[in-house]
Image (cartoon, rainbow, N blue to C red; front, side, top):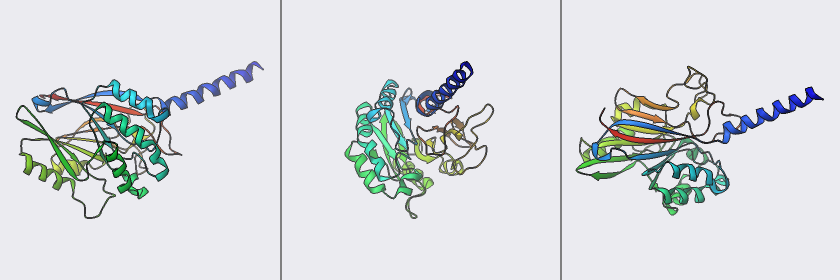
Length: 272
């Protein structure tokens, strides 16, 4: 009887740990240097790869976690939902986020795979979220400019504007000295971001490599490759920098291990 009790306790602990790894949101503050002095201290919460998941009714837990970070801006970098039945999570989350801070969204590969992109963009816009579809918005403070670029995922229209072209258009409109901050879903398009010469890219897609062990950047990449690169945190590129969220949700049979749902807060800092 005692031996059976120990096994039941061990099983309960394992189940509890597995639940914790899938459902306990981990926040992380990431300082990114090189921003214009006028934007020093700007706080950007990054929500990525929710995959229709709910953290509490109406995603209240996620909303409270986001609010606790006191962001000036919230960005959603794709894979919010895929199938139409997952749209039910969108209104409460989108409306809640816009009450915290201005919120911007770009598509991921899963939205296009689900073939409901126009409906999703319309729903988000009706909730106050600004959808960026290969376009940009500019912010000016004390004579300096930050340009927020939003790139639709490459699974989108075949003739859509490329990221380098989008960046060139932003520089032409706002000047070569403007700080370009790109929202793009995929972490594995580093060469494209370098070619575009954007200063900072915020993305997701890799789910942190699913299982994170010491001395690895995760074990499984978004294309089922082994030992992927660029799956979490801040990376310096040959031009600019990139912050990758480990994402919040996932899809079975994949699961998270030592890789809790991730809610990064990027703080822009002036200087090097």
